[in-house]
Image (cartoon, rainbow, N blue to C red; front, side, top):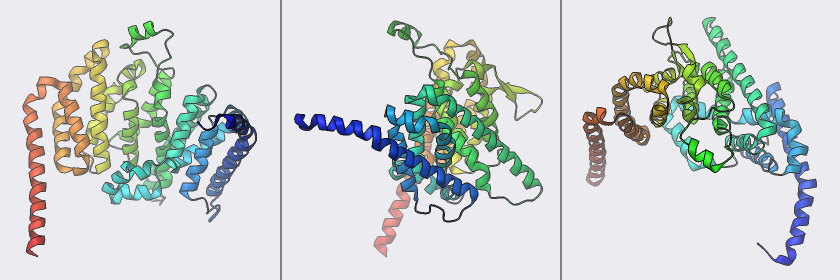
Length: 409
């Protein structure tokens, strides 16, 4: 790359940049974002108003780049990890107020915006925060993962406390801005999902031969018990039918998706028991609770939740089928899950027919469900093709009528 005789100059510039300029830039970005956070917390109107979302995203991205340089990381980033996690990553990783309005008032646009390329741009605050978080727990795992988990548990606890406080105030008819209630917990759940790979991947095996022999066996994650407790304490309440905020249910379903390989195979999840929604005097497996609550979410009136639930439940079943032959506990649960498959199938079929925005995910979910149940669902396959053909014919007929009206007009 470039002219060989200039390579020495490039090396000299790189060393000078990392030792002098990079530290200065990253330190300034951290200071700027810290000041912005303090201004927001103290309610200063117009403070640092020149910091647009794009500029915030670029500033976070510069910190992300700095994590790749040992000198910059050790000097300017590592000493401020706790601040970076709590004041820079968490406040910017969640859904914005504008997006929450779309979730309630224009769900189709909400879905389109989250799935559009512009929203996945590298320099948006949420995207940049996600990249920085994954970089810290991945490339700088030893020094940062413990701090991230500590900050995450603190944020989840505070988020749940805000929800509980809101419910008390609602009973007393006291008004409160709802985004202030759920935004903290939504950001923490998003962060929890973003670091799933770093939490659930097993320790690296010492030899390729050993890896090949154990590739089909589940190796407990390093944080197995901690993850199970977090999912039980903070995710289950958000996907239960009693959950007060739809956007938290939507985010929790997405978080479950990130942990599906762990949920269906973890010893802690299989042994853990939670209170049953149907009978408060009985408990059920944490895995069954995830599956049943997700199936019930398919009936939710809010389109984003139905779409996410259709993806989540079928991913759980897909992963369950992959590991059920290796664990006696899963074989015992198999019949209970299989009994709910016809109901699940009918609900996915209803989503396919009634929700155009969810057709791709619903169809994918139906295919996974058929693969899970095999011949048990063979009689229902006809209904899939009938629904697809009927829907396609209806759309074509509508389009033809519109064209005919335009020609006649």
